[in-house]
Length: 69
Image 1 (cartoon, helix red, strand yellow):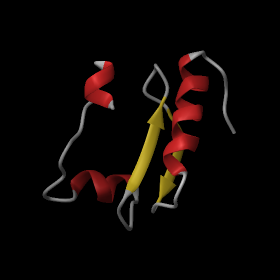
Image 2 (cartoon, one colour; image 1 turned 180 degrees about the horizontal axis):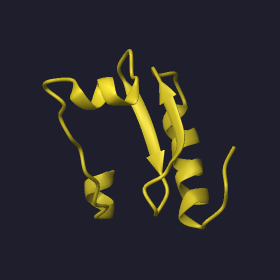
Image 3 (tube, one colour; image 1 turned 120 degrees about the vertical axis):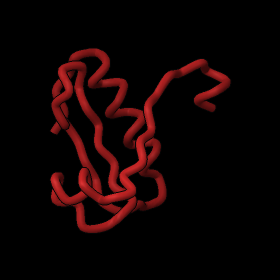
């Protein structure tokens, strides 16, 4: 879907676990949602079905400048 929409995103590897340690992440997967200023506005450890729908809706709100809880 990302490719067909032409959306750009970055994906990073952390082979030495430096980022994971610095962020206090204890398990993967771990998802962050950042606002346009680089602030983490939502995060979740693990995965549950339907999370992608929740993340998509939150992303739309953040893109509009809305605050999320």
